[in-house]
Amino acid sequence: MLLFLMAFLALLDIGFALPNPNSSFPFEDLLSSPERFGFPTWGQSLNVQAENLRDDVESGELNNCQFAVEFPTNAFVTLLTFKQAELTPTCRIDVSSAQDISTTIKVSKLTQCPFVVKSGGHAAFAGGSSIQNGMLINMARLNMVSLSDDRKITKVGPGNTWYDVYKKLDPLGASVVGGREAGVGVGGLALGGGISYFSGRYGWACDNVLNYEVVLANSSIVNASPTKYSDLYWALRGGSGTNFGVISRFDLATFEQGLLWGGSRFYSMDKNISLSEAFSNFVVDAPTDDFAHLYLAFVYASELGGFAANTGPVYGLPVANPPIFAELEKIPYVEDATGFSNLTSLTVALNQTAFLSFKTVTFNNDATLIKEVIEIFVEEASAVLDVPGIIPAFAFQPISLNIIDKMTKNGGNVLGLSSSSGPLTSNLPIVARLSLS
Ligand SMILES: Cc1cc2nc3c(=O)[nH]c(=O)nc-3n(C[C@H](O)[C@H](O)[C@H](O)COP(=O)(O)OP(=O)(O)OC[C@H]3O[C@@H](n4cnc5c(N)ncnc54)[C@H](O)[C@@H]3O)c2cc1C
Image (cartoon, rainbow, N blue to C red):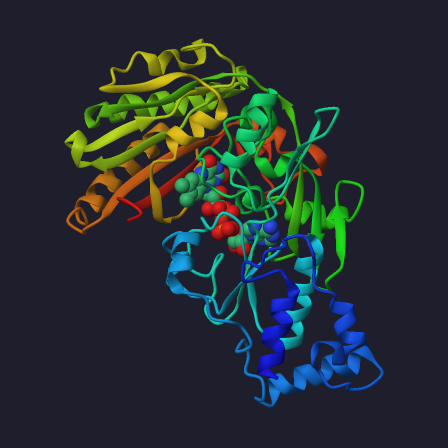
């Protein structure tokens, strides 16, 4: 039985880096002609055969997940971020189509071997997109990025990072609402919410998915949009993915986009009060200019002599220092890395840090509270500075009223924010690791 299942998964051509990524395993053939694949003929009904396979698992003849070929641990270390790499899956299934995902779900059910889905692998906790004793469904081969002829929709596979998407769209003068760092995956960001440089204009990434191709728990493949499976569509917008199905393709609203202005600036820590006020005022004023985006961060960086502040002003048009950043402009910085660039370069420039762990909390936009949070951060972070290899950091992100307004389109998202929530600030404590090596 064990040998059969190893052969079975090899035949699947959805795993173990087999050469032809396009063919998929004929699962129905397995059920209707099991002898072709080395199974005994169990009976006439497909259910009987499925039940027999399950019985083998339950009786211990086939141990849960033991059918899988072991993958070298280091292959996962390169595949996953630090937290994810704490767990070692029994096997990795490299799916190439929605049908492959469907088949994998059937196999998972038949063998009672749990699975997890991995897009960019940046989930903040072990188990988010890795698993101990289970199958890791790796989306990497689902790497389609295809702009429609009318330039209104980009079909994107969940195997892409945002870098892959922008690199394809930038030369076409088009863009989508996605992540701000190159290495983050399309899957997790678009399903979890998705704060973007373009959120003032269009809302979060999840508000700009026009259609999801989804593989459901019963292995069927459906499309969820405002008009089809609209309840599923709503749930997927910010409700995370694997809870409801596995997304095999995102159809993203697309817009014309040229060069942007922006980047990052560093400040000495004594500017933290004026920066807190400038950031908080920006969150209030943001609805006057949908093209503007700003984050405020604090980090311990020994090369900068200790704690330092960092801002990320970005403008969606090639206009340097637009009036919306006037208050910020008055605050002297020690290092300036702003300029004109396309989105690909901007996301690469920001993609310098590997996060070991991060959490989020959201509160009313309030400069006094922001200042207090910074004080607490410095106090708490000071206690762990001698821990080797980590950099404590902290970021404030805007959820201004124009963003909240754009979140209500297409029936609204599962996050349920409304303008009565008022402008908000999302706060992100981060522990970043120094380097990937
Ligand atoms: C360096 C860094 C920068 C970030 N920048 C931003 C940012 O600018 N804006 C923002 O909003 N967030 C940002 N985040 C947070 C990020 O959006 C989340 O961590 C997100 O979950 C990562 O997605 P991923 O695909 O890379 O991760 P993964 O770990 O692969 O996926 C995250 C979760 O989504 C599930 N999932 C992934 N793909 C699918 C699918 N196709 N079907 C079903 N479920 C799926 C996974 O199973 C997992 O539970 C950042 C995180 C990091 C580490």
